[in-house]
Length: 459
Image (cartoon, rainbow, N blue to C red; front, side, top):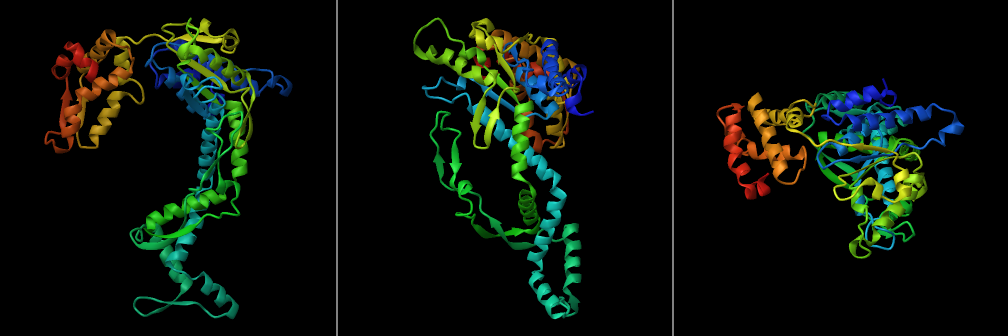
């Protein structure tokens, strides 16, 4: 089944593979994603009228807000941009303007589509690259053309003095090339230098930070790219030539059109720290532009047309997922117009010790699996006993309670401290079977946990 046709229940099931708990948030994003498919299947007249159901996620750091949005975008193969709302400032202040997020999303989309197109033509690119590499190894094309004109056979002298037709030599080289027997041979390869020309900044009302245009892109015919010869081995030369041929085969006009359409119809922007642009009661100081940022965001979220280097892009149907802890404010503190553009509110739950145990073991990318696989590269068989997993979860939970609650991210700091010695000594260890039990965890972390000042720096 195509990712775009997944039902809400199937979307939640896919998210469950990577994210523990947070069922309400998963249901909300699953419905939002399914609504996109529904919108594509209504009448053309009504399709433009259906606005995306934007979401505000409320919850402390490290509980899965970003991961839910990122995994959702991967499911739908959608362009995805995560950006902190606090990076933006009201027009007239120093900082990024809000329209830059649409330009960034389009750049990501173009790279995605370009990679897909290059993958689609990879076989053809490899064929063309192989012929070019054979020309370097056996420069005979010119001789072939001359022979065709004179109707005389082309010959090549082998190492033992035998006269061999060039086309036979070429096929022999092709077989050696494909078998990898020529990989270490060094050849002179003419490669195109990367563009490093000066930049022109176009000053406009939309800001300058994203309007840098390369002179060589604007006047490509006047300033053709330079070529230089490099000495590389055959395997590296093949990679370079495949990349060059793939770029030639890709139609960039088509890439741009597809990328713009994908942004407009299925782009996802994750606005983190949106609570940081909620102004306080003060009338001056650093808070003065916060409401201005909200008002600048409003037309983008409502739907407007943004000027980019690839043309105009509409934001009407981009899905916006905002997130914030809202520790000292609440969503209702946002300006009313912006509140109305985020009709879905979901609150994410703080993580418990049991959640930590599940996060360590259940997801497809669980921390325990990551550390076991990394140590396996050193020949170490790392085994975590159940009581050790419980103890690690307990330590992470206690440290979060005593200090700043950073959610599941605390598990990373705990695991790194726990396995520091093993990670350092792994290449030199004679004992390849390592068992981590609760006693080992307590021994390694007990002093850090008990000393609150030390734990602030270590965990």
